[in-house]
Amino acid sequence: MRIVFFLLETLFFFLVAAALLRAWMNQLRIHMSAQPGRFAIALTDWLVAPVRRVLPRSLAQSRVDWGSLIAALLLALIYGVVWLLLATSVSDRFFSAEASVLTVLQMALRLLARTLLQGLMVLLLGYAILSWVQPHAPVMATLERLCGPILRPVRRVVPLIGGVDLSVLVLIILLQVGLMLLG
Image (cartoon, rainbow, N blue to C red):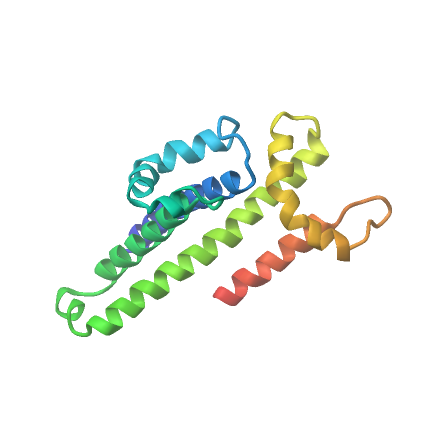
């Protein structure tokens, strides 16, 4: 059963991460034809497009990509429901509706938080490795725009040490601490 839970969590991690990445790229006005935008659209368009059609006009036209954020939330809730269905026996499923709803919400919020923290770590690792190995790669401009807003506050606090920017390392450590707190 652990394998099933692992596969379920991995599938929903990628779907939620793609929806969150899509929202972040749209927030930063990064053209979606660049990678990883095409990948995020390919993974999430089946859900984001219908969500956008039912959004009120005021939300659909705002600067925030509510369609992608709501899709990420819906995917996390679906994960919570499927997890609960797999984790409990048939006799236990309808024993306490309140407990079931709380469990689904807890699992969904935990998946969202973990996906956000781990997704940021993946972006930062990719950014750091490419900046050392191939700083002029075409994807570096996109990674710089994705990581820049979250690195700026850290760069204000962490000075260059010997000409080396350690802000990425500091932020990865902070994200790892956040993951530990999630348990």
